[in-house]
Amino acid sequence: MKTRLQNGFGILLILSFFGYAIFSSLSRKQFLDNLLLYSGLFVLFLGFYWIADYSRKKELQLFPEWLSFKTQAKPHILAWLLVGVALRLVFLWDTPNLSQDFFRFIWDGHMLLNGYNPYLYLPDELLATGVDFIPNADLLHASMGELSSGHYTNYPPFNQLFFASAAFLGGNSIVMTVVWMRVFIIIAEVLIFLYGVKLLRILGKPEQLILLYYLNPFILIELTGNLHWEGVMACLMLIGVYHFICYDRIKSPIYLGLGVLLKLLPVIIFPLLLKSLKWRKLFLFFGILAIVVIAGFAPFLSAELFEKYGSSVGLWFNSFEFNASIYYVIRAIGYEVTGYNIIGTVGKILPLITLATVILMAALRKNQFPEILLGSILFSFTIYLLLSTTVHPWYLTIPLLFSVFTRYRYMIVWSFMVFVSYSAYSNATYQENLWWIAVEYLCVVGMLVFELLSRKRNKELMLN
Image 1 (cartoon, rainbow, N blue to C red):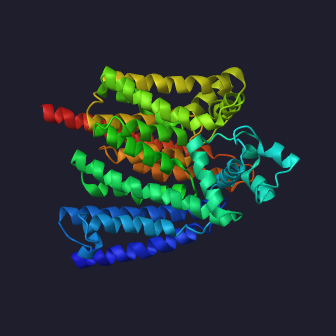
Image 2 (image 1 turned 30 degrees about the vertical axis):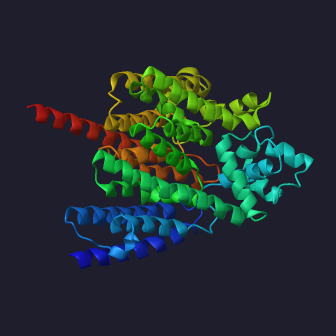
Image 3 (image 1 turned 180 degrees about the vertical axis):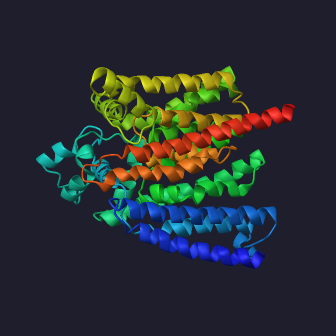
């Protein structure tokens, strides 16, 4: 059986290399081709996980001892780590094929490198006045799209630092700048793997569970392939939560603060941490966190910062719509009742409902216990996404990662089904196919309800 598993592993690895190489060459307009290939890559991913799980249960050592590299690490842990790195390197020299956001990343990076505050200038305005200090300015501006070029940047300071670092290392080359961004993201993914394994050991769970995140084609394609920085945010959040569970009240707020400086979303979990902090530790914890966040924004402070940055962030609640669930139902009702799109009103109310729900979970759940805290983090982000007006695929990164540490697997289903949202790019008008969206959320919510009912039933059986 060991030989069969090793042969199967080799076949899966070769097919995965070819699959990701082909995927990176496709256009996002080729929706059905992408969906078919993505489905195949997902099957290969499940095959990898089955091999890892089966070999653990049967205590089969599939990998040679030298893979431990004379460390205390088990050979299979380093083997799976290297498999993930190798698959990510397939994308190294490719420009993203499903997203054009990286053009704005490069633009912002060169802005910061040349001493300009990226929060204060629109690409459209700068191009009209001349931007000879930005290499390939015309190409970057044309490629980032009107939506990006006509709005102020919404990427927080730590993200801007990564953009500037990649722009410095990449110089005038778009490809080399992309390569360096990808290197940063791969390093973050490696840290997620290592800290994920450490946290699973603390929880007494099988180490291979981290593969549900680390080898998931959704993660490889959206983060390493399409250069979305949710992976770096996930890394900082995971390390912060890890140190929080280990009672390190100094390192934890530092990493969580850096997570906020990379993307603002980690603030969602802050109410969940309150039960584990006594008053003195609470002030210390949030004091350190506040210092980190304020220090990060300090170099960019100006009279215009809050107005322009706030207007950009506000667009995600009051203007943008994509791949939503509950909001689309409310919008349809709004059209029937009022005759117009009510996003301006609903977009302000839904975040308040999310906040109220998170506060309720913070009050009612025993979040001082690690497993319950991790579950609360998962459900907080799930509720946030279900109530959002915009759910781009890469937004699933955080709940997918934290689902690994719980018994819930509906995020695995969502990480597969969310790909159907790319059907919007298969037509010239970028019109969403609401049938695809309906299928996506029926599968996800159906799986979530099934898991919740199964857990309730199991509890009742234990009590009886």
